[in-house]
Length: 325
Ligand code: PEP
Ligand code: MG
Image (tube, protein in one colour):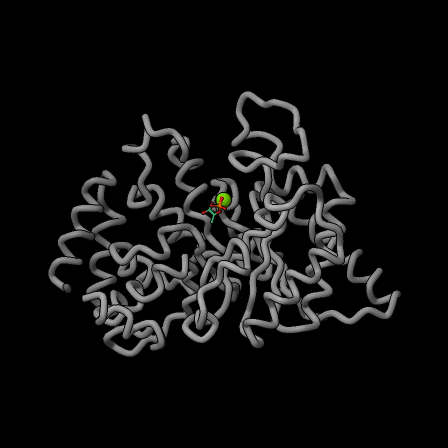
């Protein structure tokens, strides 16, 4: 079976009835990228830049960051690379930055909140990413956005950085897209409004599950309650995709649900535009997709959305999977 799976690596992600799926990868440190992955996948759906900061002894400056982002973008030869701005705080700390203790770090000063508070740090990163856009297809993604205000402020800083670069005669892609992670329930509720202003969304199921179900993603005591097959999560994902599509905006997913073969029929039926997963999941997800037909996936989704509990949905997804493999 392992041999069979690896045969799927180099193939495009295509369903049994011929729908092609855009399948991207999540990347932590660029040097960890597997040989050949840039041929196997359609791009990078999530570049987690915090690792660049976590593996350093101090804040990487604009040149250090630019070198890494540019190298990454060049490796992908024009395929899209979504670079997420710093998502620090919560579970991710920096040894050289002593942030004040918080009782509820996951509800505290993290990610975009911290970046909007430390604007010089944020601007430096934005300039480095924007400069890298001259060397391929770069998109910028803001993490943990919970309000339109935050997106507008972040966008204003990105535009400011572009103007500064332009004035200095430094090249960048003027059509560079600015999107957000959809990982906080307020974004789901306001999706129609966000969809008018952002260029794209990417669903972060790791956090969306945590915040929708009020279940700490790191706490083993409540791990049994943490499940993206919860109908409330499925309804959230579906409503976000529908709202985005009404405005002609694309939706990706970079949380771990995107790489789960059990979830594939549901995501396919919802019309997810870009699936981004760890490189290790690519072959098995391509294989799962190759067995799917749209019509039966839609039927499974209708049942799932209409269910009461995560356990029911998980059972349905497992039964479906077993009939296919
Ligand atoms: C997510 O929340 O699903 C996500 C992809 O981001 P992270 O796991 O880095 O919080
Ligand atoms: Mg997240």
